[in-house]
Image (cartoon, rainbow, N blue to C red; front, top):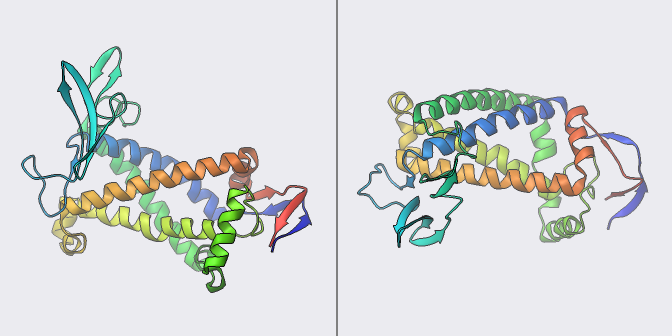
Length: 276
């Protein structure tokens, strides 16, 4: 049962390592998503297994077709087709109709270039990988992962989960106290840090021919290069979904206060602050 306590002051919210990693990731993920979309445009289909070619059956296709003299964009997922004209597959740029999976306003670079896309992706991957490894090691050293990201056993109950969901629906994001992450935060952050990000790194390495030669067991773990490519895309999609939800919650919680806490590490509590 939540009670009300007097707030209004500044409380410590984020560690320095978390803040640095957060802003480095903003740059790295921006590069990786944009350049990854550019690379995907070279062959906008995904497969399962070791091989993937135009004669194989993809489980996902983003493309374009001519219908009654007009080009239409579509996304086909396991036989279910969705019209995406104007967004994916077919879009306009400089008054011309373009037919690529992802439009120019998503890709890095804006104009299609597989070689440039790979260079930007490689740069983003190095930033992302080095920063992530340092953050993970430091978080193990200072106990951040076990203390702040892994839920306690008492939290992993249906009642606790339902309580956390209700508090979020009421836009009460500080019900666990500003110094601690609440249950939904712990589950989402742990899922990203311990599952999605390692999956992105592992599948990314598996798609590299050089790594296939050095570590061929990666192909066995992920079921082949095409399966790794599919898992890489799915993990990237989940990460983008997390980012959109994260931004939405920051806006709902008060963007100035939240962004300041990620810069200075301290969050300003409301005058009547909820606390468990």
